[in-house]
Amino acid sequence: MLSPEDKQFIKEHLSDDVRRLALKTSSFFPPDANSKFILQQIAGRQQIRHKIPTWYQLDDIVYPQRLSLEQCSSEATAKYKASLLSGDSFADLTGGFGVDTAFISQKFTFSDYIEKQSELAEIAKHNFSVLSLKTGVHNEDGKDYLQQMKHVDWIYLDPARRSDSGGKTVLIEDCDPNLLDIQDLLMKNADGVLLKLSPMLDIRAALTVLKNVQEIHVVSVENECKEILFLLQKDIQGDAPVVCVNIDKYGEYQSVIFHLADEKNSVISYTDKIGAYIYEPNVSILKAGYFKGTAFRYNLNKLHPDSHLYTSSELVTDFPGRIFLTESVFSPNKKEMAQALSDINQANISVRNFPFSVAELRKKWKIKEGGEIYLFATTLANGSYRIIKARKLTFP
Image (cartoon, rainbow, N blue to C red; front, side, top):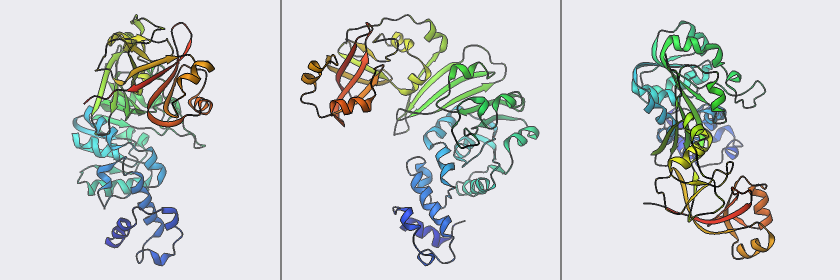
C-alpha cells in the first residue's frame, strides 16, 4: 500500500502540521503518490502515537480516516481485553480498524475479523500481514455473518454507538447491531461473548436486558473511563461480579471486584468531621457505583451520601484511588475564604456535591489551574458546605 518513497516521506514529515502540508502542490509529494492518502497516513500516525504505541513504531502500518481511529480501542484496553479471553477459535463481528482483533487473536489458534466497510477490511488485511497475524478477513456485515458462521469459543462485538445524524448513543437498543435482537443467536454460536459498550452506559439498566452476564468490567486508563465490558457465558445466572480497573501509563493496572448486592447491603457511617486523610476513588469505582461498599471495605467514613469523598484519621495505603493529606477545612463564606486563600494563586479544584462548577469557582476565587495544592468543594453529612485544602500523597 505504501511505496518506499511514500514511507520515507511520511517519516520525514511526521512532526509537520498536516493542514499546512495539504496546501503544498503535488510536486512536493513523492512521484505518482496519492497526496490525500499520504496526508491521511501522517495524520493517522500522529493520532495513534500514544494510543497504540507499538503500531506507531512500524512504518508499514496503514491508517484509515480519523473517525475510525477515534472509535478504535487503545493498545492498553485491547491488551486488557485479550487478558480475559483464550481458546481455540475467536470471531470479531465488528472489526473496525482491527486493534482489538489484533491483540485478542494472539490468544487463539484460529481467528476471524468481520467488517462491512471495504476500506477498513482492506486496511486490516494489510496490517495483520505486517503484524504476522494469521487472521481471516471477511468484508461482510457482522449480522449477516452471524447467521451462517461456524460455532466458536468466543465472539467479540464493539457495536457502533452513533445515530444516523452522527450523534453518540448510549442505550444498548440504539447500538448497531442491536444486541437485544441478536443476543440469543450470539450465545448459540459461541461459548462466550465479550461486549464492549459505552462508558456512559447505565450498568444496572443494562443488566435488566442482557442475559447470561458472567462478569462486568469497568475499564479506565490513567483514571479516565474508556469502556464497559460485559462477558456473557451460557447458563450463567445470579449477581455478576463487577471488576473496576484502572490502567496506568505503564500498562499496569489496579482492580477492585465487588457484587452489586455488596453495595446495596453495606452499612456505613457518614461524617461532618474531616480526618487527617482524604480519599478520592478511581473513576472506574465511581462509574460502577461502588460508594458505600468502598467505605465499608477500607474502613473509611464517607462525607455525604452524594459527595463520594472519604476520610480517616489513620492512613489506608492500599486505597484504590488518590490519597491526600488534609491541611485545612473552611467554610465558603467570604471572610473564611479570603483568609484561607490569601496566599494561593494556583490550585487543582475538584467539586464533589457542591452547588458551583469548577469553572465558576476558579473564576470566583481567581485561582489558576495546577500546582501542588488541591481544593475540594463538597458537602458534609450535616448538609454544610466546606472547602478542603489538601496535598496529594505519593508512594514509592
